[in-house]
Image (cartoon, rainbow, N blue to C red; front, side):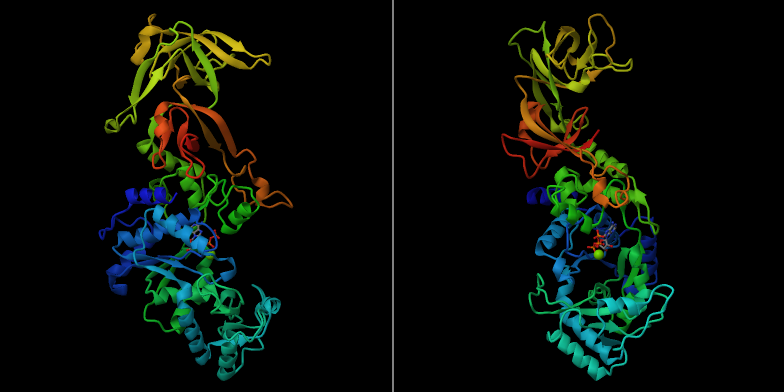
Length: 567
Ligand code: ATP
Ligand code: MG
């Protein structure tokens, strides 16, 4: 896995450029204006700030491509910062997977790897400064009371009993919070802003809460942890971020973002901009929901090839280039929408068509016996590895009296427009001969077990039949004696409905899971060139779809292929 990731990203590394293309989205326009006005001295510093509480998903890739992409485009840099302020749900496993995923997508943060937890002391000092300036206080309300005092959109909030404490009292209490003297939930540190603000986020928002839990990086050093909304703007300011780009749900948090930066008196003045998050049809894109599916065993793990996680689509065989193209294609907007999953699949197919090695594979085999082909005769045939890349050379396979074809390429009573094999009909075996179906053999249950055919010896190399009749259909095949068996996993949509978040009455999103999203074919028959399949290469099983080796379960001698996407 690791190897594949490293190689994939190396091949697809974007080069830095300081000559941006004409602006196509509002963020590019803003940056251009800022540079023209010499704001930030022309610097562009963005950041991708994941919380290490789960694996990244395709939605995150939009934010990654955007933040790293803008930095590249304008000759700036993009930081990778872990927003690790919620120790209960965070873990180093997630930190590592996130770094692997960003690299795989082809981006490099260089030396700029940061953790909000590295700033805990600084953030604490900033909080003391706010207290000293009369802009923060220790509040004795518990969670339920906090909610009640906060009011709602129609009711103004009520002042906390702690709001009028003296600076000395607040400092003393806050220091004792840090020293661990108080129980969890017994008090918080809050900003003193305006309990009557129409913006709920400005009604004295929390800055710190007590959590007597171990942090994956700071251990037991802290028992108070900063809130995301407080830590985030300050982390941006500490790192001299210029353009802090986040998703739309943070729009109403922007006034507090600005308040925090202004009152903490930092030199740098990052500005927050919001864009619409990526939603894709037939998928859920929330770490919480993905975690639930993993925990309940509804998928095989975060990297199940059906999952919309980066590790899932990597194992599935999607290429980083196709994800970057997808991010470009969908663009950046300020209004929420749901993107059709087929747009993503289209980008994947487009890229795979250019790179995938061709091969023949029969997924659901039925035997075809050529009665007029001599017993024991073999003929070596060949075809290009890629039709447009002669430099990749040719692959060899052998023609024999008995071949496998796919069951769906034969129909006993086909409709008029069926051009594949039927009783008495003719079809071309791809890269080989035209055959005519003479007899259909069935077992006691009426199940077709064998097709007896005759071949036309003059038709090799795409040549016309002896009688000059045009043969429309071409089907793939492999030799019975010269093919090998492998496991092939086909994937359908993970969910049955376009918007899985809308669940039937009384149920949750899991009720929309597609029970048939995985089909395992144990005895697919593959052409010999695939014996040398490797993890870095993608394959097109001709007429079927794109496939790759499964990085976890495939073993030499017992290959397992994943279907990436159909044709
Ligand atoms: P989720 O809602 O899936 O749990 P999150 O927003 O809590 O995701 P973070 O780790 O906080 O996850 O996200 C890191 C960054 O990725 C944030 O800047 C966030 O705005 C962005 N991001 C998350 N989901 C999407 C999405 N669907 N489309 C675009 N950007 C996203
Ligand atoms: Mg978040």
